[in-house]
Image (cartoon, rainbow, N blue to C red; front, side, top):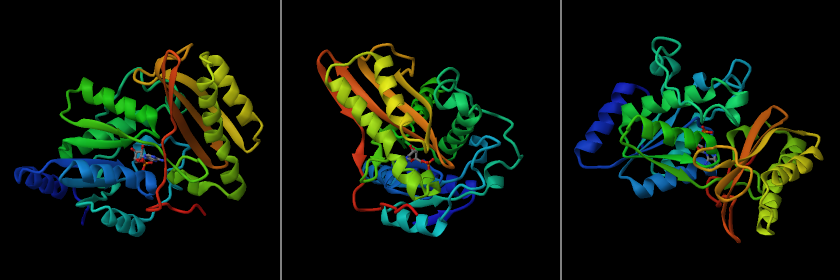
Length: 304
Ligand code: AMP
């Protein structure tokens, strides 16, 4: 594995790989790798010949009062994890390298999909994400890019952007990876103290119980959402930001569960803003509840 810091070097290496007939895979990240990140690398390693992982804590996707300065970093640990996943190139640009003119002068904006859910509380977030991902697509030229379904809205936004801009990239969604106690893996779990970490379990538990209600026949979105709200309200360390049933593709609100929908939550737990979701596929009386997958032994990062 080589570590690359310059855009032009990354571009040259990807050009060379494509010239040699290799397919290029891309996994964009902000680092502090856990088993969720590593599962994307594993999927990308299997599906593509030349694997680029980018590690960039992108300042433009953080709001002014968010956790940019505190965001956890561990370049040495991340490089070792990426090497173990047989990554070919780990790209770690500086902020100046990505934005040599300061604040971006050109911004990619996906309308509609970015307005609700996390976009309501984080108004600049998705423009930061879509702009940096467009730049990475342009530099790397991947045939396939891998994103986690943990960030469900982000995945939908990137799929929409890729389709609308005719970008020649296959955007692949990968399963949400969970800690053994059900908590969705996140770099931001590192912010939680012991009590908050235990309290955070209520989110995945509420989603699992919601899934059980749907399996038992409940189809009303408001009833499902109220069930989550009640359970989380009993946990004083967890402040629910939203709980919503949405269409899994369009993210339009849905009054009733039918077809493929996502039940998505966001909550503040101590200093950490956490998100989680369950995908529900409802076809008459047949229901599939997709909560993701447990982390394997490999790459599980213990939370301080
Ligand atoms: P981040 O470094 O948090 O920006 O995440 C980089 C990529 O890893 C995104 O595509 C995320 O959706 C994905 N990811 C983060 N956490 C998880 C998780 N628990 N399971 C699956 N993918 C994840």
